[in-house]
Image (cartoon, rainbow over all chains, first blue to last red; front, side, top):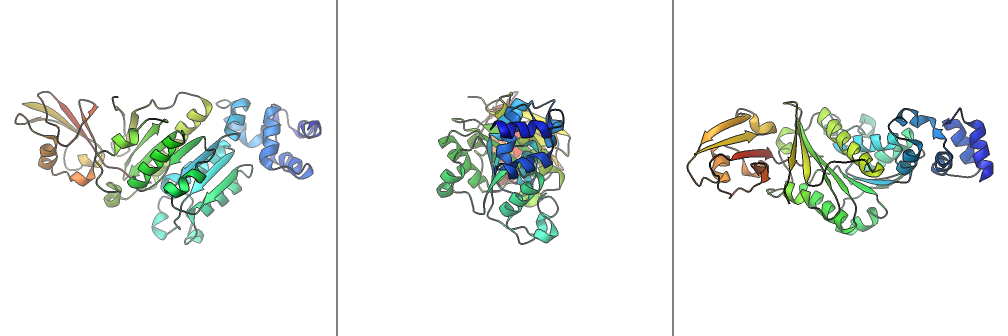
Length: 274
Length: 74
């Protein structure tokens, strides 16, 4: 171990570790890039790619993110941005789940959708994108639909789950599965110019309240569609909440949801009483 | 009696954001929803005075009814 630490310290620039040195250490000592990253962070060396995180996220906190596992359900409009932001943040393990392939009508808003990926599975595309941005992240891709059968395996060891699904019924199943495994769930959803975000803490049932009136699995998004900017906003709010949960900052309070209306430039916080 | 109705997101299109309304005693949320020509299937959260309400709930003098569309996209 001391040999690795000496190598990293020798090749660091101040307390920053360039990727070339991280890669070389991984090759020389037969380690995964994530293992090198963990050794670096525990010895107060920050991989250079996180340099602009550092006034908000300390080296110790960066290590907490590396040791976290976030599962993202849905790799479409919301999921694409969520996965992108988690990878850039330096979340150590990201699980991505989506059974669908990219279609032409996804191009207007889904970050991971490019013309050459039309017909490719979205979870596989997400894994490739993460590897291209931050190869130290360990990605697990599930090209399957979330259901009660698959939930136990997918949620294994997950610190926080992110809802980027497009079906209310499956969302409620995910909320129940997260509760069963004591995993906080950050919920987000979109329709047209609007959307909302909420956090379901273990034992809470805010999604049941949000969808108490539901009669179908889809809301007004079926009629309104979704433009490019709404998923980016709601996904970013979700990632901010995920980050706060992982770092022990104060996230959205239980039983609250934040309704976002970009057309009228309004953010409305709603509290569901006990 | 007087109530205030607040509409959110696309429910405002061709309607209003915030409007005082005069209604008969014992009017239900469902009746207001119908009067505003909102589609019940598109109804998300219902709040009465900031608390979670339901379609069958009857409104009282001075209530504020807030209606949010059902949102499920991802």
